[in-house]
Length: 168
Image (cartoon, rainbow, N blue to C red; front, side, top):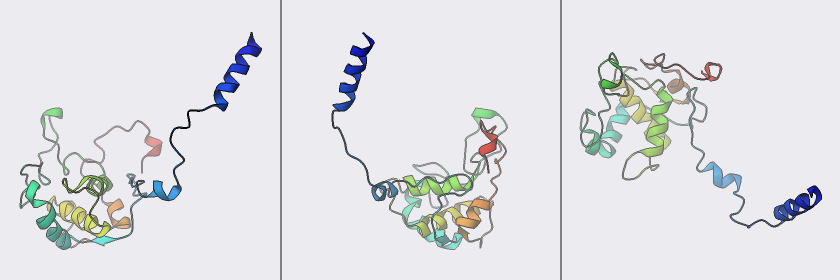
């Protein structure tokens, strides 16, 4: 009986449905855009709040409002301290634990009508602008792969990590 089962499973493995095809590394690289909290995966490039203000005015203000205080999309500045748990509206300044998450989200999902169309320099500039508006960084601070990863967000210690040994 065992021999019969082994023979059937071996035949089953030899005959696959031949669905799909192997994906080349170069094809995967175009979609492998994840950024880790410690900055791993950040691309080359840089931007300032001044440059970010210009990009924001042309590509973001329509949804987020001219001062980033909200419009048809969420506010990007402000936010009260998280004092009463789920009742407090979550914002970049009061909730997000890592600045690299801001870069990752902008690059991956913005602008809403044309995601993944911003250059790395534009994303760094927007990150610098939004962080500056929230007074997390200074008005002339340059953001790049090194400086962005070093920005300490106000709610950095507001989470209990499941794997503390993996945290930056």
